[in-house]
Length: 258
Image (cartoon, rainbow, N blue to C red; front, side):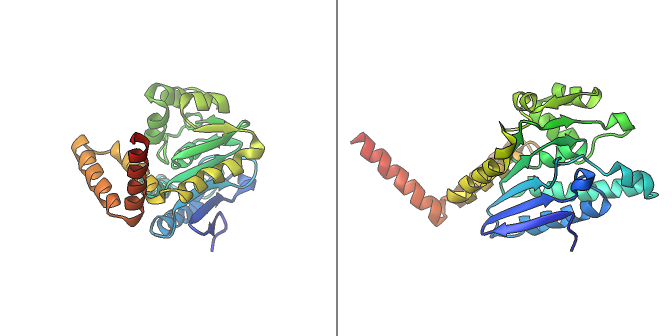
């Protein structure tokens, strides 16, 4: 089994770790296949309630492995195929009912932005930096960047990152909405785990379905989203967990009015 991406389980919590620190976790051809396989494995596992996405070493992800592209003899169709493989994994995670929190440190560049934005909640270190660099080497966005980045920060700011040689710091990323929280570097891992544990300690299934509704809704019609919302809330209402929580809420409300 490849060690370019590690998977660890702690009960219902799955941890996915980019593990090419010597290459700033740049995603090459083999790592892309590993990413796809991990995404299918985790999103198909009903015992997984939450996911932490993190990385070994000083950087979160430097994007695609440009050195490997340049020295492997790869052709344009090879690069397209590799991107499609990684996209398969991104789509599986984004459209799943598994809420994902990313623990981000150091540099996030190029396609690393798209991989980071696969997560639904992003905890970033104060030392994190974010940059595109696609056009600097004559390439165009991939790994969901052209969709996930404007969804997070708006079209104008996405274009500012993509069309200028601009690096933004963690505070700017927070202001733009690129990340959810900024904490000291020493606290990133603990804070990300606290977010995941909050999901697991509460109505895990409901959090997962809320994530799925929001993340998939942008690509569908309003009518389709309303139908999905109606079906989802009905399905949740029929679960034992939801019935118990609804009954407890109703009882507390009745008591407060008496």
